[in-house]
Structure formats: C-alpha cells, structure tokens
Amino acid sequence: MAKAVALLAALLVVAAALSVAPAPALAVCNMSNDQFMTCQPAAAATTNPTTSPSADCCAALSMADLPCLCSYKNSPWLNLYNIDPKRAMELPAKCGLTMPANCQ
Image 1 (cartoon, rainbow, N blue to C red):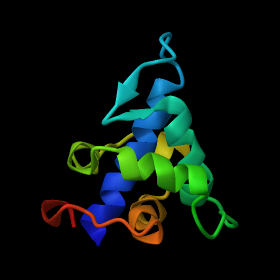
Image 2 (tube, rainbow, N blue to C red; image 1 turned 60 degrees about the vertical axis):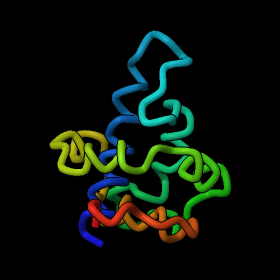
Image 3 (tube, one colour; image 1 turned 90 degrees about the vertical axis):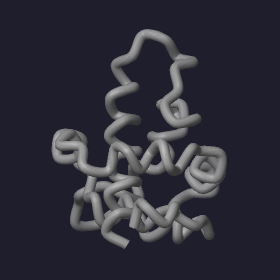
C-alpha cells in the first residue's frame, strides 16, 4: 500500500509540474495536467481534503499508465505541491483500480 501511495503522490507531482508547461496537450503517463489536477483535492495535504476522488479523477486514473506513474512514487516534489503521499496513493483503490504489484 505504501508503494501505491507513493505512486499516486508522484502522479500529482507530475500534474503540478505540468501546470507550468507551455503545451496544453502535454501528457505524462497518459494523463494531462488537467486530469492530474482533478485528483488533487482528494490528495491534498490539508486538514480537510475531499473524502473521495471525483468521477473525473477516477476516469483519468483508469486511462493512466499506472506502472509509469509508479516510477514517480518517491519524488521530493510532493511537499512543494501540497500533496499527501498517503492520500494520493489511496486514490486508485478508491476508484476500484488495482495497482501494479511492484508498486505497492
């Protein structure tokens, strides 16, 4: 589960990084910046994040390359974008998705 948390946290870091990208069509691991940002409210490092991901977030995650996202799981950028790694990595399960075995 810790690896899954790290994966989604990395996903959200990439989303934040894409927010400064000049090309709106740019995607990382099959997710656009807009798709990443739909998941941010449920993974925010705040005292009151949303309890579950939005339907748009789950749709984006279902099309994402989860093994690719897993490669970002230990990114130091998470704190810079106010992302709680544990919350982030809980999102795939909340969307009914299975994380890759090597990412848990």
